[in-house]
Structure formats: C-alpha cells, structure tokens
Image (cartoon, rainbow, N blue to C red; front, side, top):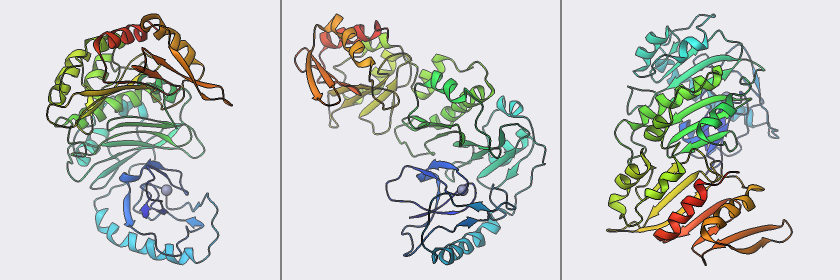
Length: 405
Ligand SMILES: [Zn+2]
C-alpha cells in the first residue's frame, strides 16, 4: 500500500502487516494506522523517488530536498511518484487554507511543558501562543537546542483533545541524553524504542524523537468514555518531564488509575480467581487499586511497578459465565530474561518448591522450569499458569513480591 508521510508528505510504499513505518526521506516514525492512505495497492512498477521536496503545506521545510535513504533500482518510479505527488497536493490546498505560520523564534520547550493540552486545534494554538495550525494538527516551532517542533494531531471523531503528541528534532540532533531512560524508569523497559499497554503508546528513539499517543476515540470500545484523553494528558506530562530532565511529576496512583501501569506485585494476591468474565474488570480494579485495561473485553493487562516479569495478562473464557483460564507474565519489553531467569526460578522455588528443569535449546543452553507439576511454567521470556488455583497463586505472588534481582 502507499501511505503518506505525516511529516514530509512523501509517498511511502509500505508492506501489509507493518505496524511501525519509518519514512525513508525525513526519518519520521509512526504507527502505520496513523498515516493517510494514498493507495491500497502500491501501483505496479512504483519505486520511491530518489529525492523528495516537501510540498508547502506539510511540516517539513520545503526549501530542503530530502534524499531517499534506502536503495532503489527502478528509474520509472520517479514518474509514478510524480503523479502521486500531484494527486496529494491538489486536495491539500483547501485543507491548509486556515494555516498560519509561526515565528522563527518560538517558545521554549519548558513553556509548553506545563500547559494543558485539551481542546481543539485552535484552542490549543491560542493557549500555546501560536503555531502552524490546520484542521486536525498543530505544529509549534520551538526555540530549543534539540527540538525543532512539537506537534499535536487530532482525529475526526473528536476534535476536543489531541490523541498524538510528537516531536521533530533539529537537524543532526538526537533527543537529550537520558530522556528514554527516564521514561523507561516510570513505565518499564522499552522494546525497539517503544512501549505500549492497551492503547497507550510511547516511542522514544534517540535519533527520531519522542512521541506519545493513544488509541483514537472509539478505537478501543472497552475503554471508559474519555479515558484516552486522560491517558494522553498523563503521557504528555511524562514525556515533558523526561525530555526536560525533571523528576517525574506523575504519581504511581495516577499511573495505576489512568494507564494501568505501576501496580504493586503484592496486590496480585487479592485477585479473585473465581470471578467470571462479567465481573473481571471490577474485581481486578478493586484488587489492584487502579484501572486494569483491556482491548477485547476478555483479556486484561497490567504493568507492575517492580518485577522481573511486570507485564501481566489475565484471560477469561469468552462465553457467558466464562472462567479465568490463564494468567501470564512477561517482560515489559517482550525481551528475554536471560541471566535473570535462574534468579527468578530460585525466588519462586522458595514458595512453590523445587522446579523440574527442562532443556529447551541445548546449543544455546536454554532451559525452562515447571513448578508443582505443570501448574506454573517459566521460560526466559514468559511465565504462565493455566486454570490457576488459589494456593499456588498465593505462593507464586509471594515468591515474586519477595524477589530481589
Ligand atoms: Zn517523511
């Protein structure tokens, strides 16, 4: 399919199934679903143009020609891309008629950081003291050594709050050192520069910039009305604190109640394993003292504040009266536990008894552990329980809560 880069406007040939798209011209990175579709089928013979000059209505400067980063073999591609570019510019002229241009010397980033970000594009533009405004976006040019612009995107369905806050770096600059680490300290480890939990997303790429975004309005039907707005406002505060090197102003209570992260391991002991699918949300919220998030209504996810395997998912049988069928734990970044695995196994052995050890990869010397028969299975990336029973669950929670790595 052909998608349009949200920053420089270039046509991007994206394969089906890709979740994150990085622009080969300007380096802008975002979720595939956020980008404007130019063609469901990439035209036959399409090849990316070798250079791209951003049209006047997009965020990227039009006076700089961008070179395509990946190799391209075809020469006919330029012609095809030219046609695509023309098709793009036509409808966009009307769209950006209300646009106004920000000054060369914009506000300092710190001046933006403490502002509320609710409201329509026009309202936010007024509050932030200007910026380049369109009907669904606002680009604020900064005077900042690292960041060139911060931008906000709105969705058609609800123009009362942005769902996306991104940043564009100054040429050749990377995000201030420690930014991504500070975000990971609040939220849990990142995987491939990203973090996500049921529609709340953070991307922190030292070269590409920082972005926070949430499911668009109505995209997660299992979310309470307006929850996405609160999520984005909280992620924005986390982002700004991290970028500015300030102590995070977000409390663990806010993390628990708004985005479903920062839970206490010991509270897992209060989870009622007999609750059925219809009582799951209320039961989990009460036991964990916060909001346990879901995107499908039968699988609930939360992130613990401190644990070797902080991402916990509870799955219910998706039928009337459905019971809790499994609980799984994984690393927050979907990465391997590696050297911590034997330590976690030792922690659990204290409360669950000695495990059976199975060799899973002889060459790489990988093993997995089984506790209490097959009740608890632990591998280097995951721990799972099927049809969990109370005594084993309580012992497991105690073993995890007392585990110091
Ligand atoms: Zn681009």
